[in-house]
Image 1 (cartoon, rainbow, N blue to C red):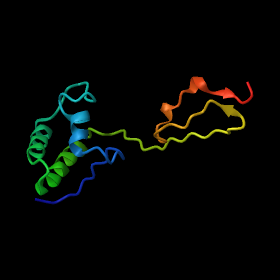
Image 2 (spheres, rainbow, N blue to C red):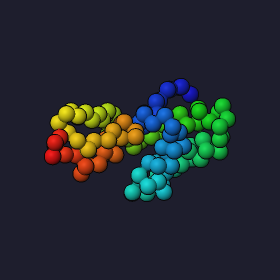
Image 3 (cartoon, rainbow, N blue to C red):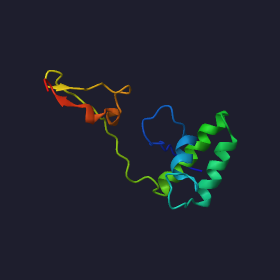
Length: 117
């Protein structure tokens, strides 16, 4: 059997595992899979990977899950982007930098005011 390396390019969330991504997006009952469709090949591969736990074999099995996701074109619209917010403190008041700097949606935009008002 030909060996292929397939990256599990599902984002840059280092704290998430292949299992987390599978259960979030690709499993039949995943919240990110509103159609509820999962191929038998993907389900069988994921079940094997899950059963392998944290064994050395698990990484190879999750690679197989990633190959199936890629081959079935289940991920065709990934976007990588960086969000940044900058402000001129002399012109804008009420800005509290978010506790997680990459989450610009955590800023309460209703608190922003022109300086001096």
